Image (cartoon, rainbow, N blue to C red; front, top):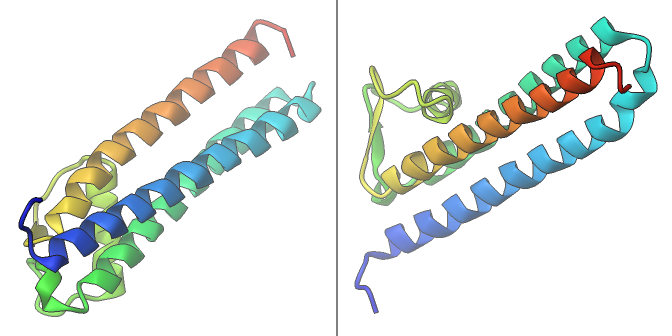
Length: 149
């Protein structure tokens, strides 16, 4: 058995929960759009605008989910901290989450301690989900522009 402090196990479990929640939310959002968008058969602009705005909203919700996760974990110093801020606020946590999710990178804020598990996993999760959205958008645009719907 790997001998890690409890904070690492708890952080790993929280990371798995946050990641799963985001993947499920994104899946359900895309599923809803797949059912709803074809109803806008002759409203191509509305259809595409609704698609993009919906995807942006899904990404924002997912960023906030991870932001709440950071904020919750970091109430206990055992899980680490985000350097670059004197006192971590929810807004700082969400900002940090957005930087990690979009893989913009660390600049003014960066993690230290067990919380790095969350940020490393969130980066690959964000990259994957953003790519998923781009692929879905490509398929939807192909349907509209090729006149299949």
